[in-house]
Image (cartoon, rainbow, N blue to C red; front, side, top):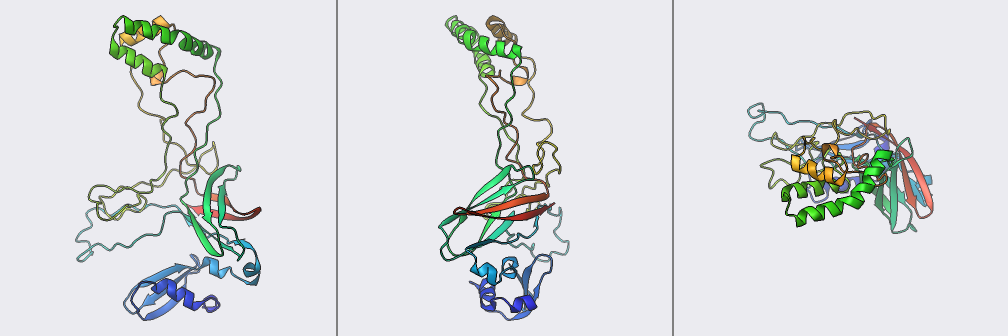
Length: 328
């Protein structure tokens, strides 16, 4: 209890009891691993509060213009609800309590003359920026949360082969002329529409995603959004922990197997005739032709793997750094 004795008991007590009726506290303990203060009441309730930043406060930190606290180890995990749990010792109701926000908490302290805003930047071991978070400014201890997700990155441009460059030129020059002629001749409208779709596919593509931040299945109305990594009942959506490891980029989860959408079968004969008239092959799998090495839809947007990440706090023209550990 030595650490607790050195911090503001009144502030801790107000955090516990804000908006709650007064109840007697039976015992206080500090969890040695999670660095949380735990209060047990005579009503058999448990209250916890994160005091990791308070444990790092000293005269040097209080005198500094800004200080980035060492983050606690953050955990990525998922736990499916028990099926057919009723009658399994649950008494008259399921026990449910609000979960903390899913992600890693990053705390920092700003002095009296701090600007009105700051930035928190997360990078991986390769130096890639995974998150660039707007952070509150002003004097005091502040906390921002990172949801383990990386910003989408453009994939490296893929150069076209000589045949692809040829097809790209023919497509641009002959494609519109042939299609306009077929429309005037009242050719198969469905085939023309399909040919246009193949010649001009939608830009970008569907990226991959890690865990969703909300959702919930049927019957979730009235409970609000339920994170799929911690569903409350068997009817809420559950997303398992992402696979670990990615040789392409340290710190990013691997995309789902199989890549993009479903593969298409052979195109109808009338569609193939249109491409014969243009003088190019039918795109395989419903894809388009390159236009000069554009960016792919690949990396980014997924949830990161377990590992160590660099946290950088930017306040004005000064930066402060700490290492964040993420465990599965």
